[in-house]
Image (cartoon, rainbow, N blue to C red):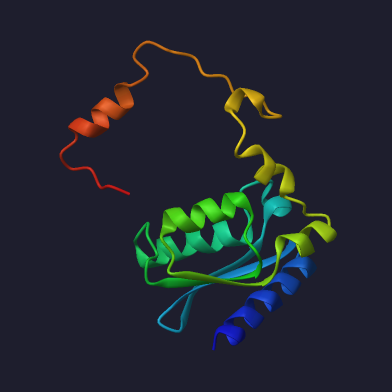
Amino acid sequence: MHADFLRQAVDLACANVANGGGPFGALVVKEHRIIAGSGNRVTPNLDPTAHAEIMAIRLACQRLGDFQLADCILYTSCEPCPMCLGAIYWARLQAVYFARNRFDAAAAGFDDSFIYDEIPKLPAERNIAMHYIDLAGSASPFQAWNRLETKIRY
């Protein structure tokens, strides 16, 4: 059954290429039923976050009316990039199945190794410099959140 859903994700990736998108496809499945699926829409949508996994997660959350997908499985044509990996953890997906790995993606021109290399660096040492400024009052959003009695933790 996992191979069947994974095949559909690969087929979706192929169809997405023919439809002007990138060579990636992803499905979110719950209780053996496809909840959402998408191809990579970065270039058609002019959105660098429109990876197949992110798009499928967004659609699934909307369709299920929840920001967590704990009872769902993600099937994706390729090993998720660092951004998608973060989204997978935030969505609390149960499991992920993928057909190709990050090295296959790199060979096709989609090399994320530079991002993996940036993660352990201190912010000021990254290729895109990140500067901390000790700004008075900048803790106020967290303070407001902590005071909020009706907050929904995520």
